[in-house]
Length: 210
Picture 1 (tube, rainbow, N blue to C red):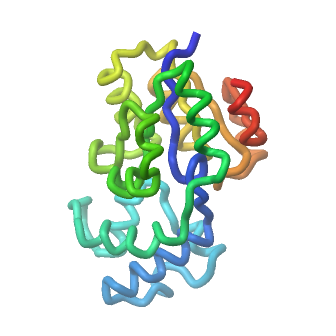
Picture 2 (picture 1 turned 60 degrees about the horizontal axis):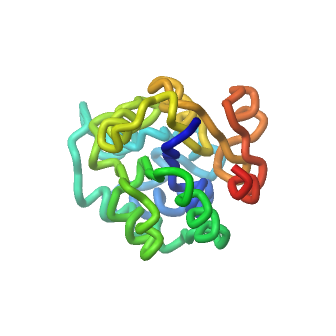
């Protein structure tokens, strides 16, 4: 029986999209003093260029040999990205329902500050928020999942991770926890179903019956 649910954030609880990401990255590259067309020219080319491990994007944009944390890079990105997004309207009811039965955690590749600011008072439903600054390796590496298991003192076989991308599935799989994927996020549904996760959520209401 599950005791812990680990949520990805963007695309699962927050209304993220490829258009939002593309717009934010264009402004980010320009703020770094470079022409975005060096890297991508339209949404389609951006999708091919973009790596969900945004450390690798930062390396390419800044011309680094290896990843070095840049607070300015992160700040500029979230200043342009976060205002475009909002919490899905069904989220408060879903969290109130699930928190009665499960311990809830967020593991996001966004910063912890971005997640907490977006959640506002809804943060009270979560025992832990793991952001990008809390790990050295982003998804699909399971570091953040292991961190959540250790802090909440929960066994892997009592844990479900819910995401919207293949990296969420892989992080969960690599940590030995149960896998769940949603249809309303940024991942391609056909590709996600082909992964055969333990749970598929086609609509938010499915979470209410979980």
